[in-house]
Amino acid sequence: MACPLSHYSDVFNARAWAHKTAEYFLLPREPFIEIFAIDPKYIRTPAESFAYGPNLLNRKFKIAFSTVRKDPKTGVLVPDNCVECLTNDMAVAPVLVNGKVEAFQVYVGGSQGERNGKPTMATLAQPLTVIPEKQLLAVLDGVVKVHQEYGDRQNRFWARLKYVIQKQGVDWFRARVSDKVGFKLPLPDPDHDYGNRHLHHGWQGQPSNGLLAYGVFIENGRVSDAGPNGRLKSMVRDIMNKYPVEFMTTPNQDILFTNIPKASMKDFEAELKSYGYGLRNGKPYSNLRLYSGACVGRDTCRLTYTDSEKFEPILIDELEKLGWGDVKESIGVTGCERQCFRPATKAIGLVGSGVDRYQFKLFGDESGRFQGKPLISDDGEKMYLRSVPHEDVPAVIDTLLRFYQGNRKDGEGLGAFHRRVGADELIKHLQQNPATASLMEKTFTTDCVME
Ligand code: SF4
Image 1 (tube, rainbow, N blue to C red):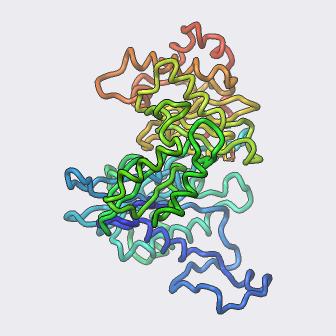
Image 2: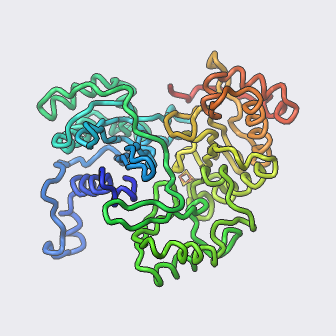
């Protein structure tokens, strides 16, 4: 995955690198050619490709590229991590040398999926190395080969790269990849800045061709004419027919219309408005709504316990009524612990844990730089807010936000506040608050929590 907007960058086209990587790791095509009797002349053959051998990979393997873009107002180069790269098995972040992307920092071992009742974990990738562009493909190849060799093939729940890194450590892994590529991988820069989670809403420049892109917020990725967000399905169809634009989806389930001439800006905005875009039940989208989101949940995903997609907008409605719409914080909701929307890299993560029940994950934040975790006492003995009925979720968030509002330092975000005060202080506050005290009486064991 890569930032779609980087396709039009004059600094770094992460999307092109993601395509190149996808081509390189294409699965062997021979079995498909044979089974479906495909004429090989219709098969694309990449110039270089990964040598899978007889065993393919241990399980899925996700790779993401962050990017760098130029701020149109200041001309300053800004790292952009709309993909939340560290949540992937492997992440690649560009490194600037004299204002140009000439090297990459590679991270390994991220993944958000867990499994209830099994010792599994959600974690962010760790820095592995920093290398020049000409060595990047060889290092990607080496990382996948080492995982292919050492990753678990007996236990499906431990088959992802994060468990190899957890067990052996990143230094051991760097040495194995060095063996594969035939040179010693340099140490990474522990302070490398891969950027924040930019959402690309509204007008965006396309420096490579001087045209514009417009990012449209799509609540939970659902393009529909039904519901309180306007006639989005008609809007998308009609815009695609009427304007010579292209259509892209973003890593945050939104839409980018691209290649819009500057002269069409006013018309284009009026067109969006004519379908009711920008309002929900007649009110402009709040900050909290724009930053938050959910996975598809019930109706679409058979693995879910809850209706995450439909619950999240109603939860934001409730929080807006309580006065929290303006906060620039994010809430991520998923229907189960596989955590496809990456809830635990939001300021408040809600992970479906039973029928219409959610587990709270805290200590992450809007920047996508911190891994959210369950609320566990500092002695590691008790877990709280593991299974909160959906109707009680607004009261818990309201209590957390009030605690934050009354005690934060200047400029401190919600996640940073949670990390500073720590679990025991949060637990004490929630226990003492009448709105949440009864929810805090129920505690859970921490047997299956991996650190
Ligand atoms: S997180 Fe959501 S979309 Fe992903 S498997 Fe669970 S319910 Fe399905």
